[in-house]
Length: 251
Image (cartoon, rainbow, N blue to C red):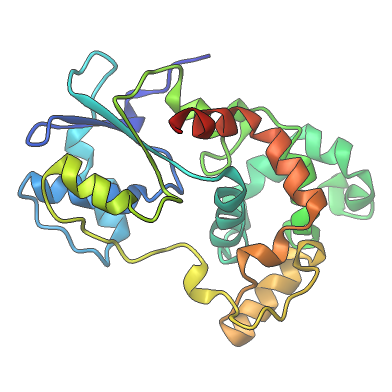
């Protein structure tokens, strides 16, 4: 497997930790916590500053020493989170153009390509089920980083510490490891928008356009569980089966 670029590795000398970044795996909170240990003042409400400004000087290469750390997450929950946060809430389709324009999607969803200009797929016409089927056919190399497998970021590296985002005490483990309190960054995921009374049966078959319209009107999104039909779960588990092997190895 190809080794990832150094931009996905950060080294923090005060805690002697080399952190492997995996998008959608609480990386904002982890970075903010490690930065705080360095004495860097962090605004937990400014995610862009944490990612693009404050953490940048700590980029390192493969030879950097230190205790290696990575956070892993249930691939199904990560996939739904990426879909809602980066696709449904994101009103800039150009961000995802490289994904929906991949030949595998057009081939796997030909009925959606028909009738579109130049035979292109329109993001708003895709359902979550459509999107899951299509992404399942695309290799990590051609996917947006929020959809690439977690194994892709690990790149064959061994890690001293692998924390599970889905474990209720992962933040406590992080605090003990870093040696300071966890700085919880304002979540830019979607749980805060989830509809509490589960009024979205069959959400996996709703189009992105319908989901966006509903979010614009009500400020609410379906919960992750609303999307998880057995068909969707089977697709995602098969696509990210290597990630599940990593999670199994923790226990």
